[in-house]
Image 1 (tube, rainbow, N blue to C red):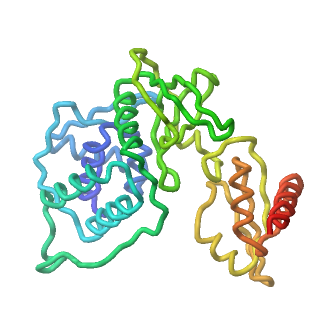
Image 2: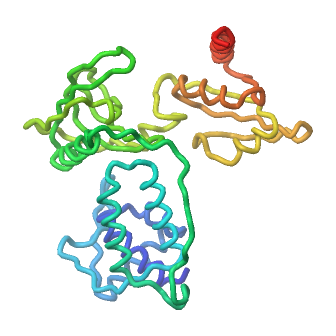
Image 3: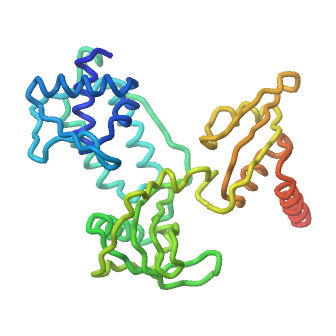
Length: 321
């Protein structure tokens, strides 16, 4: 892209995210740090103030009083991406589907659409997200999400009555909410649990009751949800182990089509149309489930302990059939 278009995209990013590190902007624009600084200088020359804050938690930002007079438009690819994301969330049973629908249609009604690229009408096509929608009961999960969101903004602790699947009982927990995230069409809360004195994950649908307390908490500056989830095949966390799998065709092609872990290494075995998959992973429960889903197309090379556990599980499964 040109210098002007990249500078404009940088302005849009700062307006949307409020503050970004130079490296984050560089990654988004696919340029180096020096070019980001050039874009900043050009915007400043145009009278657009870009504030710069040094240090680990610094970066570029727009003044709080900043208001944009830009007449922005969406190109066809951006409109398509917006529509697909909306339809995918809508069909997945997203708890805020009603609000999402209202926001989506407001955006589509207010944006400038380039009719020269579209013609006289927007494309009419179907897009379906094949998934297992969350089972919402009396909108309870929806109300819990609203309260958690409010607590996240106010930095207040919450008190929950939570069903522990492992212990098969309801427990009272006081939690400092750090983040909300979605996994397999279910919403989860990550926060510091006072009972366990460590960061824990809570499935929103298993919260029976929730109240926001009057106690404030301080979110650790070094907390990163991405780092917290690092090396997890799913969301379960335990000891990291090196997993080496030999995967045969056609499963080998299916596995290579996704990134299962940021540290994965895939090596081809051409003579056998197979691959060697290597990665350092956490979450043994989901690792075993993932391996079993490959059926006879996979062989566990390492670790030996994992191979034994899978064999034992298979033996139990055979007895059931």
